[in-house]
Length: 262
Ligand SMILES: [Zn+2]
Image (tube, rainbow, N blue to C red; front, side, top):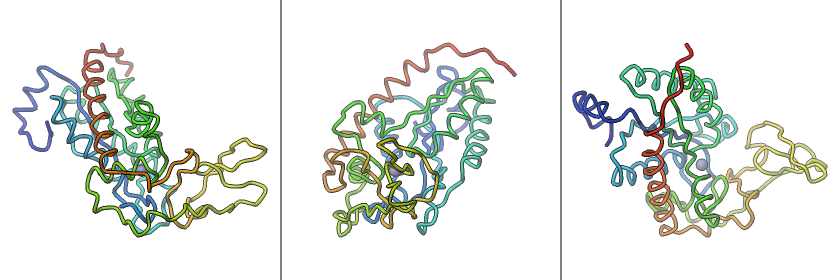
């Protein structure tokens, strides 16, 4: 059920039997030349659509922007920043809390959102509620290791194909990541904003546009490539994740709540 399609009487009825709500959170950010900026929003939306077919969980409107400071600089990428997303998500959750919601399930589409989501989760915990952060791409890779992938790699490309294959710009799908050793040649670029030194990754936060002029970054995953993606892979993967979330939601909803601390 989608919150935006209900009236308040239906919400009152829902709250008599459940205090669980799903909130999808995405981002608007570069995913390489072959992928749309809304990748991390469209995929959670598709999972939510499958989830709605399989469960009675209430699903709030998707937050279409996230914390994606790393990707700023590629035109069209817009970031709320970590603090901005904390503020927005906490405001939404606090109002839902007042109506009686206590089990918050975040259907997250973007890794950069996690710091904000975790902070809001701790805030809710102190108010006697639980937040579960469901990172779809990590769950997919754990359900089936063949599905695991990086930013704009096969996994996310397959996910977008499940939404609409025409969203992929196939003329760019063969392009390499175009990684540069932007910090120095003796500190070569590693996964995301890491550099490698003597085989050990060290994080140096900086904008991804310094590292690549393409914007997909999957080289931490062996053999990951957008060219491997298919719509069938994407559909099976997103349906499987939706099934997992539906089952998790039942167990989560049955959990007893922490004590109120403030
Ligand atoms: Zn993404």
